[in-house]
Image (cartoon, rainbow, N blue to C red; front, side, top):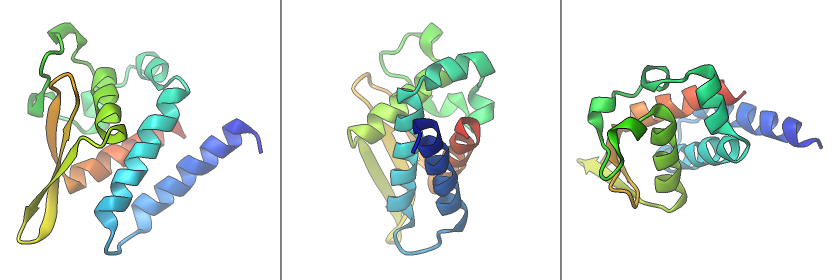
Length: 136
């Protein structure tokens, strides 16, 4: 199967999972989907797509005021850099769950640059869905 077909199929199947799965492992599956949607396209030039398409924080459903950028210079605090930091966080398992009454409510994503963001599960799902739409 051609590489481009495999990638499109992967994204389509991931979208189906995001839209339809409602089982007990939802957060784990969401992290797996996010990993695939951030790593696969990034390895295929997603940063270039971000710049060409002019993708910004609002396109991703992200409020940049909620992000702690750590040692990242202000001029580098872009949606593309946010996705790079998220990729690092997910790929290197720098994720912490935040629970209330035994249920995971939010996830904290960090990377080695001092980047940190806490996102409600619904927001993570929204981000994953928007990423899938952009890379389809």
